[in-house]
Amino acid sequence: MAYNNLNDNYTMIVPTYNRLPYLTRLLAYLAVSDVKFQIIILDSSDDNIKDQIKRIISLSPLKIRHERYSPEEDVNEKIMDGMKMVETEYLSLCADDDLVILSTLSTLIDFLRKNSGYLCAHGLYFSFQQMDEGYVNLEEVTYATPSLEQDHPLARLTEYVRRYQPIFYSVHRTEWWRKTFSKTCSLQSYLFEEAAPACLTAIAGKVARLYLFYYGQNRETDVAEPDNPKIITNHPARWYKHNRRGMLRAFVHYRSMLLDALKQTSCSGMEERAVTNIVNQIHGGYLAESLRHCCYENVDRELALLTEDEIDETLFITNVQATVCADEQTRVTFRIGEPLMEYLRPRFSMASAIPPKAVRKAMHEMAPYWVANANNKT
Image (cartoon, one colour):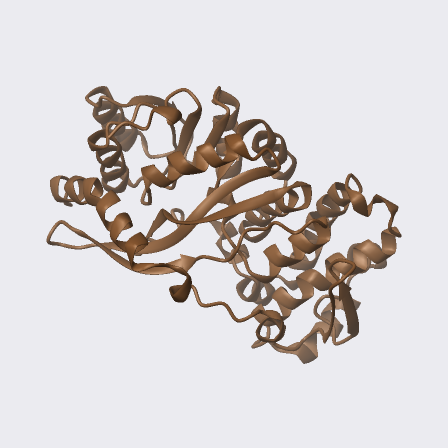
């Protein structure tokens, strides 16, 4: 099937690290689907695996650019380098073990072309498992929260932090995403280095969610680099346990990026301290929920070890009364330290929002991946 609107307008970036079987399946899926768009593989694998990937690429009909990196190369620096190579108007990332529904990808490109007020667009994310028999089992919808379409930048930021969605893997306008991502490469933590560019996007413009199956996440795999020392920073509870002060300092750095971005929006007329407090409390709900099983009585002692400059207004874990004013109409009051996500999160049933026809269509679209999986068993 041809996806003509992708050919000269879209580039797929695929970071990979020593996962040849998964990368082979992804490339076979794209080849069976007869795609013509540019694919950039950012390869940090060991040399022998790099050579095998090179041979596979030489036999592929796909339009592939294979870039080699040291295994020690920081993944964000590698992705930033890959973005500099993109010459098309739109791009997206795809992990080497995942897959993208190509008809939805085509629809997202059309949506962005027709709706200039949206900086990126994505669809439904789902998990899948590759079975021994050679087929792929679609297991569950993992992310299906609504579009970020609020008029006020703080309202969009609040909604993103309250109900996370992987904007990182959306289809992006290349110029914007490249500029935004370059600002956040200095964040050396999994938690904030993915959240920061997504938050900056939500602050600057709208994010569309189309209710079409879009991105499949492989259930067989977890992180690509389990031995990377940064792994402790991929979840607040783990990070808090291992390095509480480091997490607080990282938050202050991350927050400064958001505050700088908010100054360029309609928030520029608000008092800076008020905006800072709102940003603190927006994140307080998320972090308090993540840390609710940690030992709260030790938190104040940990904060006391920090200097005033280090902690600044970062009170997102302490037990204080706070009011979030997400926009002029919405005001939410809560106590930080309580399981706030359950209090704040609106009722939303992903299953009820997805018609059976969409599931059948997604399964049909995944058929080429079944073929690739059957032909590339490990």
